[in-house]
Length: 124
Image (tube, rainbow, N blue to C red; front, side, top):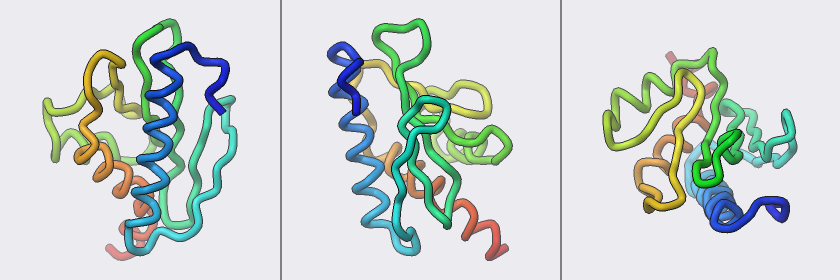
């Protein structure tokens, strides 16, 4: 899936994919996760949540991102919870650097929030 990416982006994106799938499997209420390509990016879709996409940041050899739908309040929620612990890009992305370790605890929680977005919104 990530064969066209140079290291270390290839292994970082593969690790982020694994984190997304592991989080989906361990999060109550998240059904089956469908993997697909959307806009040429690996994407993860569920009936309970907002689509998550991952990719290298365009024009960067050492940055990659987790993208969510920009018309949700997910990035605002992530900012409220994690503040400066994570790096954000507008209303649509969490951005990571290959030189820094991934904050798996925070990112996994953000993934769980995205994958349950619709079911949480319906409950309110």
